[in-house]
Amino acid sequence: MSSSESTLAAIIRLLEPFNEKGVDISENTTFANDLELDSLSVMDFVAEMEDHFDIMIPLNILPELETVGQVVEAVDNIAEESRG
Amino acid sequence: MADLFDKFAGMIELRDTLAFEKANPYQICMDEVYSPTEAKINGKRTLLAGTNNYLGLTFDERCIKAAHDALDEFGTGTTGSRVLNGTYGAHRELEDAIADLYGTEHAMVFSTGFLANLGMIAGLTGKDDIIMIDADSHASIYDACALSDATITRFRHNDAADLDKRLGRINGGRNVLVVVEGLYSMLGDKAPLADIIAACKKHDAYLLVDEAHSFGPYGPQGQGIAAELGMVDQVDFIVGTFSKSVGTVGGYCVSSHPEFDILRLASRAFMFSASLPPSVVASATAAVRIMQSERTQQEALWRNAQQLHCGLAEMGFNLGADCSPVIAVVIEDRDAAVRSWEQLMDMGIYVNLALPPATPQNVNLLRCSLSAAHTPEQIDQILEAFDTVAKSNSIHRN
Ligand SMILES: Cc1ncc(COP(=O)(O)O)c(C=O)c1O
Image 1 (cartoon, helix red, strand yellow):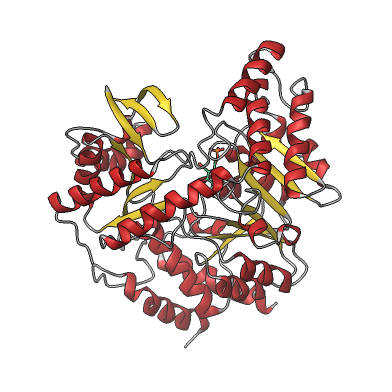
Image 2: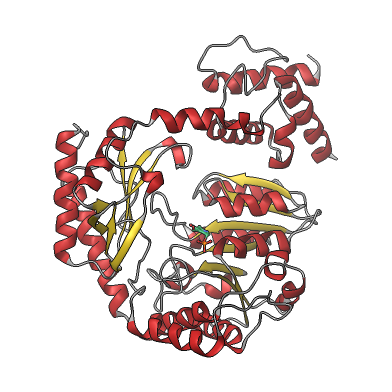
């Protein structure tokens, strides 16, 4: 499995508790429209990802992350940088 | 064509689905104010139990006289910002009084507490810095972050171990400013400040504590929770407001950082908004001196908080936190919360109705805040009213 495939798999697992409508999650799934995450859930989900990947995800970049695929890419980039 | 207001469709729907019949929490208007604890609202004499008037100083004779004298002597306003023509001797005197209260080297006064957070947090941080805030922070702290060029990140509410872990993830070389509140205003829960200070020390992070709601109720002279722990000198920046315990309006920050004063030339919220009017400054100074020299208000406030907290707990209500001057009754069902609030208003009791998304964990709250000026009989009246509304709205109690 490539790094982004395993990141995607992990993120889908982390999203499970927030997927109240039982949406089939793929890279194209959007947080606001498909999953309808409110701001509190977003906070929890970001914290879960930070803990799982042992990284810091700045609040500043959240507005640009609309789909699961964009989050996978951002997480991989941050993890890459912090390995430095 | 698209309408700028389209983005509010969800909010408008939410507002319109809250079917208020007798009173509307978003249209409260005080026609007359009789005392710190009573006002005329919608034509009815109402007991105030949600005004953050912790020390009950809004009608203190000494504060009123100081304001009157300043009004006569210096006029209605300064018509200028602090860096131009808006600094009077009285502003300096207030800053000295606040620095003296905390025993810090410096104090800076802003026009509101909201502006103090904007001016300090955005003023202090730049693009290479990191701000780490408690997830349940006040809107002014979130907005300050939005104004800053720094990297913004959060830790789990009141969780010092989580803060420690997240600070540990930051690679060295960057300045980190941690921001917490002393007493959280919605649920009335206190920050675990000693542990937060320890985490900041361990990771060499700066700490700013917003004591908006703890200024007055906590600390040997009302300075807040850091002072109550004897740890003022371990906190880099303490922010507070004059809009609650001090009974007027305004904000401040104290610090002993040797270069603190440069913020007077770097903090935009300080530089580009008019300074407080002399009458406000005078009543704030008088109130701060009262806080510093008298214990009676703080003692009365805590007696009242205990009476209401214990009374509601005995009645089996689900309360947001341990006893503090903010007592939030958690109501599971939103409509029951709304109906209870209306019924309380109908019985002549004003508390705050707080609903999601403005509340932590999306809870519905009937939030009370106590005042030193409440009498034991008034607290009994609040307790009886809660008992009545709980019965008529079948509110779950333990
Ligand atoms: C935690 C906190 N910070 C800042 C403020 C803003 O204070 P002010 O009313 O002086 O603008 C408030 C109060 O509304 C608050 O609760």
